[in-house]
Length: 237
Image 1: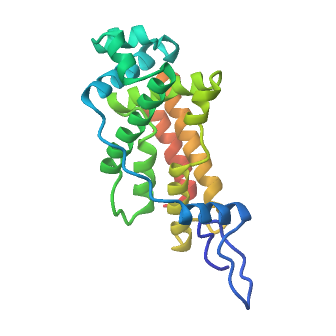
Image 2: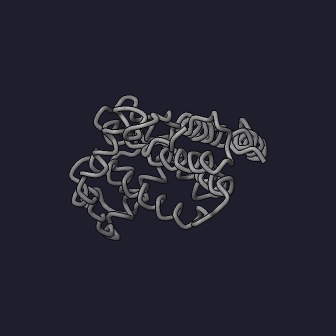
């Protein structure tokens, strides 16, 4: 077998003579092209203190009462500002909800980059660090998961918000697939594994099980055992 797909890590058949395949499908080839040709993303400016104060009020309302309760009036009261101030910084409720969501993603990414084990040589350690970001292990992650669940529920009936909340980028699944593909090439994972499929299953399972912990349906210890069981299938001890 030749090296895996340069985009998702899926194993590629050896073509013998001739130029070796680089991608497993036209879809991966197209994604790679878009990534190569896309202009560098501009760094988001630091949010103004008042805008952040208002966005954090949206998070608290979403986590405690659901996003449907985040009216301009309620957000202003929660933030301790006037409704005129909210309307000055955000021209519409949609703009407010989108800005609060993007700020939450930026905060989460910064925290995850600090917590995920950097430069880990053990793929199992790295995968566990990534999965931990999807579990309510502390107050911050618990609140984040509740807020994202509120946004997901609202996106089901709000097409404009769904266009922002749901997108075709899957950076977490891409990262997990890349780790599994590297482990597979190093002989640390079963040869028959499909990295992308395993990444989708692992991330989806962690998100769903983390939600069960929030609801009190499962304990965190039970969820950890389930995820460790699946990780042991991907990366046998």
